[in-house]
Length: 154
Image (tube, rainbow, N blue to C red; front, side):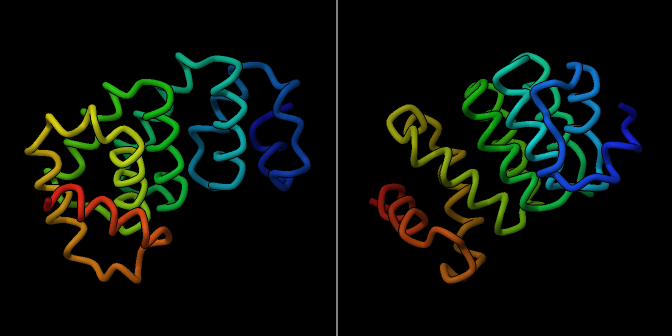
């Protein structure tokens, strides 16, 4: 099946498990249907974690991607390779080009691994400042954001 043919389907009509890995990678990296990209990445993580890691990094380097896809990609990258994800989180926070969805995903990653992240005070301070630029009500998981701020500001 070609990429164009697959993109005419809805994400639920595609059987990702039978696709060749190269086709699956194309679906993850395409930029026209974020729902298909998300489902393809979920499949790719289990079948080819190395390619999934590379695809996550490539998607996060694009500034034009869907904000919810990028948030999912950030949490996926963290589960695949927390060191690479932390480096990418640091880069994104330093450059300040974060929307609330991606910022929420970064907070989620930090809170899920707070003991490891506590040593990166620069990241935590910058992330805290970025979070405070938004109203807590804008985040999908407000309790998690509050927990993060309490832990960092304590």
